[in-house]
Length: 292
Image 1 (cartoon, helix red, strand yellow):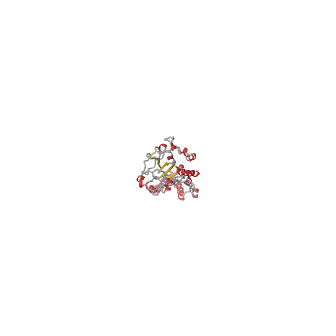
Image 2 (image 1 turned 90 degrees about the horizontal axis):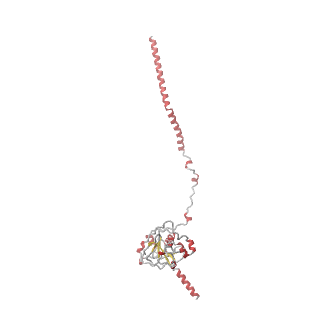
Image 3 (image 1 turned 90 degrees about the vertical axis):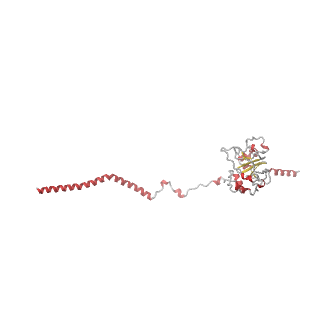
């Protein structure tokens, strides 16, 4: 009886977690079959007021956001860069808030514990996953003050890969790199694409301590320099500044003495002429005396 109970317990534990899935803080490698088998690329419609798409004609909780397909199946979140997997298990702690905020009515196959929840409101994840998760993801249900980002473009190139043409997992990263050039905004999505080997996927942002650059200190020569107004002037500029007052003073002196100098030269011309007139007058008087 004891061994039967142990065997039953092991079966239950295996049923909770799909084969090949590994629980981790992040998105694992795509290796899980979650029971969603799509023969072709599904129809996707934008959730009103959200950057998330949902599949209205699928019997499953199927979404697309920020370059990845997201599915909620068996009380777990999964992500994939291709519409039909394989899927990677995503820890509840890293699921993007815009996925968590999708209202209940857009879950086409809601779990039983969704019953009684308001269709126009997001699921009560804090109530379901517990207080510890609620503390880590505090504010997830608070809408952003700014408008939501635009929905990412759909990877419509995958429509040509349906049925037997669907690529195996080892070819999927190369096809994504060649055909889909969208740059994800979520760090967890960037990290997942890089782990898959998708070329061109931006690296997740570095921690703030690494992003801050040390403040550059000026060189000793620059610290000793004073303001530009206090710097010594070149010798040529100082000599030119000394010449200017002298030249200006000489010009002012010439302008002041100019008329007097001209007058003096006229007087000097008049004095010889007056002397000649006197000499002529004296010679005339002597001549007149002789004649008498």
